Image (cartoon, rainbow, N blue to C red; front, top):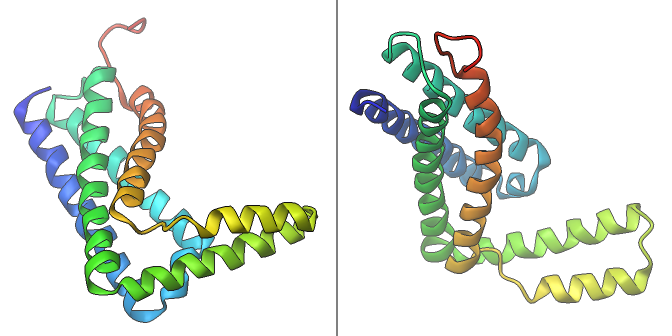
Length: 176
């Protein structure tokens, strides 16, 4: 991949990181309970994939309209990695150093949401109690837990990136 398309992918990643960090800061300032909202998760997912896809399309344009699967996927993945890393660092700073009490509160809210969800699904009470006891031992906002979440997000987004790479790739021959 040419340096210009790599640079563009990094730039898109910085924009993505800034945008998702801004969302994190605004949600933190307005209503911390939104962090456990399914809708916020869906919105962020759409934003991240859109940035990655736009980055891949931009790389195709920079490369004269032709791009291999590898180049397309690389552009997408660089953008996602940079953006997600920036956003993760902001999350670590907020929930580990600035306001650890917010992290404790969100951990508690996740337990409550988990219990309610399991009750709606008709899970036996003994199973719910055991699951909540096990989940209460985990702090979702430790540096290790957030690093692990970052890696899992990258793997998930990489799978989506494979699809994006296939869609965006464009070679001269029809069989390539």
